[in-house]
Amino acid sequence: MLWPADEPWPTCAAPDHYNPARSCAVVGPDAVALVPVLQLLARDVPALAFPPGTDLLQMLW
Picture (tube, helix red, strand yellow):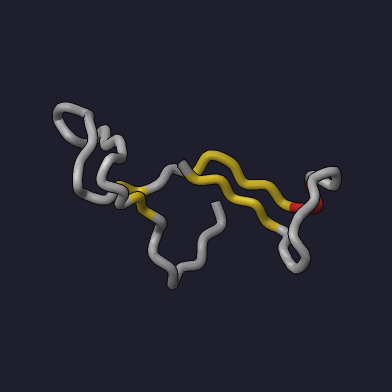
């Protein structure tokens, strides 16, 4: 996944998020890193409308 080296990796800090790193694997107050799920380049999916000036779609979960 392409990601700028000078930007921190995205995390979820919502108070009710699922955190599999905890022993009971339930919600927790600590932020967890988002997982890359999908990356699409505009040139690879011409049928998908990208906003003007963009050419990359990344989905993180």
